[in-house]
Amino acid sequence: MLSATFSTYAAKAGKVISRDSARTKSAASKKAESRSLEITVSLAHNQTASDNPYTFGAKAFKDKLEQVSGGGATATLYNGTMSEDEGELFKKLQSGEANIVVISPGYLTSLGVAEVDIFSLNYLFNNFAHWGKVLDGPFGSELAGIVNQKTNGKIQILGYWSAGVRNYYGKKPIHSPKDLKGMTIRIGSSPVQQQFWKGCGAIPASVGWGVLYDALNTGKVDSAENDYTNMSLKNHHKAKNGKYICETEHDFTTRLMLVNGDFFNKLTPAQKKWIEQAASYATQVERQKTFEQASGSKAKTIAEGAVVVENSDIDTAAFKAIALPIQDEFAKKNGMERFLKMARQ
Image 1 (cartoon, helix red, strand yellow):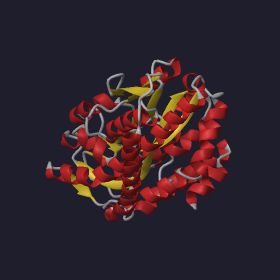
Image 2 (cartoon, one colour):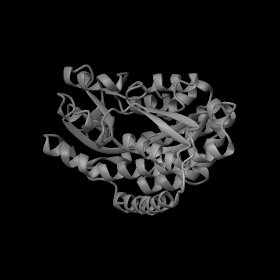
Image 3 (cartoon, one colour):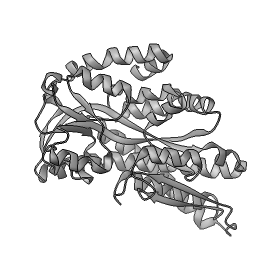
């Protein structure tokens, strides 16, 4: 069962976008003339599906950018076409080949920003409403400041996107950590994620997103974890080792909308404002699409043969017993006790 606050939070997000859309149309109708094109912004993410929330968010960025700039700016969108590998996208952001990318927070640790790995801590957030409240408050703004400071302004956060709530899926159903003993599971490279799944008795495996279906179907890995929308768009539930989806709800997932600082810092104050306004709107749109699609994606996987173990049948307390000490250890090691306290309130 999806979190109880899911529908409420999605509805609130939808109201925000509806009001913003009305203002956008009003402003567009009053625009007397367009500027000559001043800047073109490249935005890339790793999702190829046309109905992926990232794709909706990217289009919203372009549309809003063109609207608020009065035609002074536009965006070139790379919906999985620059690379499906987030690591490659991060390299392209650093080199300036991409001005803006949407990627997992963990890639910033390679630049010495260990603090962002707080997003890799499982069971940090209770539901979508809790996640949004924390990230849209001091937690999010202060963490953005840390990223800016530690990268000397080379990388800056424009928005916090959602990649849904992640669940286990694999070759057999699970109900508690003990059911994972000896199973291989495809996860990210974050040390705290590795620590958590090893603590559950599983064997972490590194497999690229683009080839994960084949890995599940051939038995290279026994299981994986992701949200309903992303795993269903890639048909992972149809793979040999993807049939059983168990709602562990261990990660209300954050993705970072990042801008190349060298590019951004050269812009005029007005141009920066255009991008910030467009990014804020795109973030709202992407989140709303994520929330909207979750229930439909779950229904789709069931209709196509997936077997779902509801969250009420998962021993969440047993999983949290493994996760919470890892959270405490991470916070102490990285000076993030105050951030952890904000997240737990």
